[in-house]
Length: 444
Image (cartoon, rainbow, N blue to C red; front, side, top):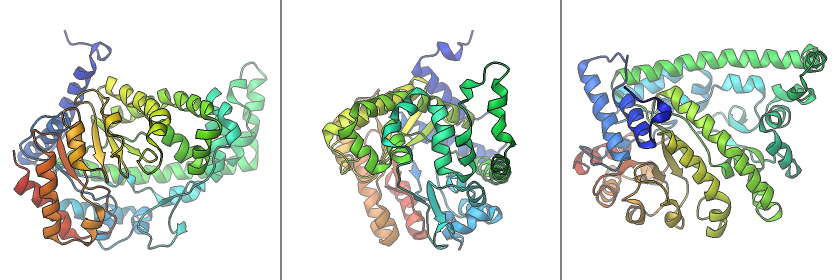
């Protein structure tokens, strides 16, 4: 009799997730060859992620918003014109060889963001020039220093009535709502529902409904592109996004200056808030991965780099709750791909404290030889072809850099050739040179 999910060990859960990913049920491929290629590509990644030797080193092209520019467009155009979004990503899909395809899921629908008055980011045509190649986070104290207790006591209430009204115009009327936990006896609905009768709240709800409709239209296009790419034989690898608790507070709530002051001025409250976020982070990440059908998710790590905090600060404030989130995902059989932005050269002895073959480390500017030496027997490593090289180097320089990376990092398996960061604009020939390097030098 087959075991129930709750009865499986983490290793068994991971194996089950990989089995579903490498041989998806109910998937209609465009040809038997496409089905064979899909399974070969997914298996190639699975073996690399779990420290086995695949047939060759897998490749993740650092595409990001690049398909828009390759198609002669820009980010603003594809954020607002979903037909052009589809055309650009399909052009890239049909004209490049690759092991995995990155769909336009991280190209947000501009009209939806406009409708709700989103303030946490700027984007082309909304705070940035039309020609700007990416969107940009807005630094700010979206949670005040004296609000830690409110967050810790009831995160959902804090989000609904305090945080969201600060970052979305459409949520401003929610500040005047009573806490939903006050909705108890017969008098409860009166106070809880009264705000919904006011003109500001009704206008806000209308904008949220319109934004939701816009997002459904965008999702239809993105979903179509994903479906076509899978049918053509290209597996996806990003089953969701998650963050370290320190980054959730520092990026989303307190801002960089705020959280760095909190390390010194209110360290206990900072620690308590991060602990409160751990189970919430795990739950939302597991839900995303389960919905995607993929075994992996990306965790971009923004504030843990060598240049951002000392080793002592990292071990005290960043790593403990980050590790708890990682282990919660590992328990569910999920393979977190931990994107260490910047350099992690001083962190290698700390981050090796994880189960063998359970995570992947995606490095940006870290010394890859040292990363392989320290982590090679416990974790798959990815990266770190420099964006500057991909932008300005010759094809021969790109191939030579990739050759050296492969020689250093691919010994005994456990390496994926990838960029240090993704490109917005760039040289198509260098993308192809990166792919060719894996074919020439990455065969086991």
